[in-house]
Image (cartoon, rainbow over all chains, first blue to last red; front, side):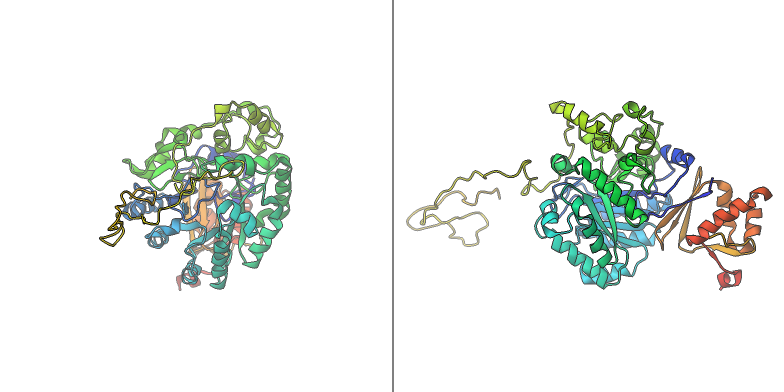
Length: 434
Length: 96
């Protein structure tokens, strides 16, 4: 047995290529502190991606204040959490974002943040390139604008490409390009790699989860069974040069294990702090079912990590449930807990994307009301998720405004707004509350 | 990577942070953003003893590595040097 398990993986959940089973046992039993954790700083976002894990859009008025965020960072420093993956929402739209990044890196907590690139100006890119303690991850879900913008919204491809160009121009080497693998973009894997190579960046591929708004599009977007195989083969061919955040351990049953821990790290080696300080088992499980506690309670984050009943339970040995007798259980370990939960499958059964097809079988058999109800939604009210099966005709009632009754409302500046010497217009024509 | 000799003087890279855990320790290198796992506490003691004032042989002795295990631990340390968690450099450079 070797004494050192080096990790070739640079991002979360940090994962060594080959770890002994005893080490896996330690991880399953939970560590004194997470190896890394995801911290979503805000639910506010300029985009409305159709697969958003956290159903982000609007800021929550209860979000942590700057001082509360700094107290969390102090605690992470004490617990020696080496780095945090900051996300959202779009974290950079918080006005104290750069202040918090500086505070973290000044306190030996490294930062990797995920962004759609909206705030990555040439000046910011220069600043980021100068720091060893900050890493950047740009989200891109299509190698072409057509495929990307279909999921992430109009203009988002251009925003991401501009941000990447700014980082490359500033000399930032090895930033990450993070791709959620979908039915639409799996044919583009080589193109993604070419984009990453062009910017001297590193490609990171992750799994589409049926979490948040992802639940609404999962059926249409998750890779088809033959695409899972294509993805697996591509990952094997590209080895450790492509990061996966340990996303695809359920595919290990195709053959040899992919680089990574190959276990569900939820509540054991990873967790999530959401914008209002709630702690969940993992970034893909924002639901009351996986809520461990809040950093606002006495004892803070450390008490939640060490003592929460949920985390204690997740660290107990699992028998494998319905998968226990499967010969591939040792490699896939039953797959992703969140994927099962949000597709309405039993937690101790196969993953919905089980490579042997057991998940699909269960999906076909599940009851109509099997899907869990979301326990939170911060989506933009003005841009709801597109209806499944494509948008149909939009019903409109057309009317013609009488020329002698111009629109007038409370914010019209003229004291005579709406007043006409011959007629009196009453009420408001603009159709909104204000 | 097996080229590290027992008479080498080693130090922990200044950008490496060490977090003890029940099974051993986690090492994180802020420069390379890599993580390593030390799988036992004896190795952790040996790594901590690599402070630029001792040879590797002395550091292993400080950590009470039995003679029969020295080669195994030397190889483990070589892995850490290879990933730049540890640096091979004489004490006078460290002091500078």
